[in-house]
Length: 163
Image (cartoon, rainbow, N blue to C red; front, top):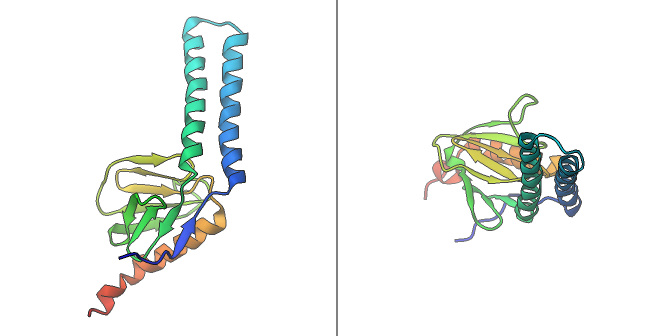
């Protein structure tokens, strides 16, 4: 049975280019410093590693932000179908200024710990905490957060009106 999607977060192409472009620029600058100003071998290896990691992260972000996040009555998932969290498992939502959350996003706390996962620029999961946001628009993530808050506080419709 296919459920209706209540809210969707899809990064715009401009935000994708800006995010990956900035990471690529960091990689170029760090590699330029490493190769143009010879230094001690330890620092050279460090700078080469940081430059390579920046390119790897830009690559991962580009493909991760090609996906979207969808909210249904029962789950939060990616557009490709990967489950992020079940609504019934969410015990808290935080989008405060001082929350450890992605840019323009929100933080979820679930009842059970699951496997760590990461889609750079879109969402991450560490144990019981899930961060949604990054290169997403504030309006889309705020709307999804409010819809999710309403679902969590009201409970599922099946619990209220059993057949």
